[in-house]
Image (cartoon, rainbow over all chains, first blue to last red; front, side, top):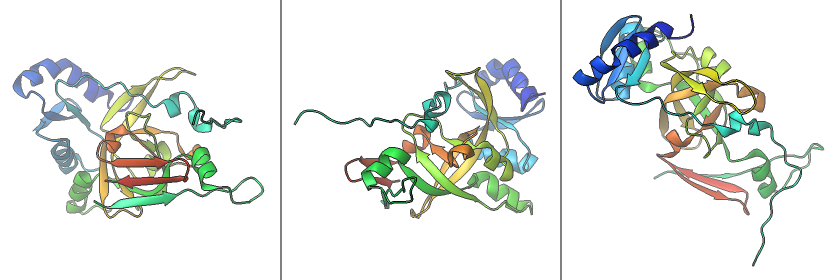
Length: 92
Length: 157
């Protein structure tokens, strides 16, 4: 089972229901348990750590679609790039 | 507002110092950072009598092309960071991968404040000599001045 797989499945199954009750709030899920809904991600993290210590737990903002993660330096391998010709400038 | 001014330095393969503008072009805007578990979590763990791992120190590349901040995955493991989500990172060269999301706190060495990055993505950065990629989720709180001809960078938070 991959990381937080159970929590993500539980979230997907209940997102609409929780969204109606707690729009735009941050929820904390561990296993098949909703710990609560919080006003900020900092509050959610603190509540999760208070309940579960250093264990992993899911934190998501209700109603927020999964953001598209775009890190070209990683995905295109640009961190390894070593151009032989540097760019210059033209004009005056 | 505290401002950190960085003059880039680097050596060529022979060990000779290269001009700052070349160093900046080669290395990019890098700063020294110390990374630890996010403050909201750290306070709770301490209240439970748990000890916190020693912060990891290393270089962070300021990457205006990245939507999200990334932390080296091995460092995340050493710090015992909890995963709080999983995201899919697309790739042009291989299949998309699922990466853990960790809450971290970044101290930029030389600036008297810390920056919270509650959703940093784990990625293999150590091979590139990096601990962190600072993405636009953190840069939205910063002012960055990239002075290419001078080979310097100014960062304020």
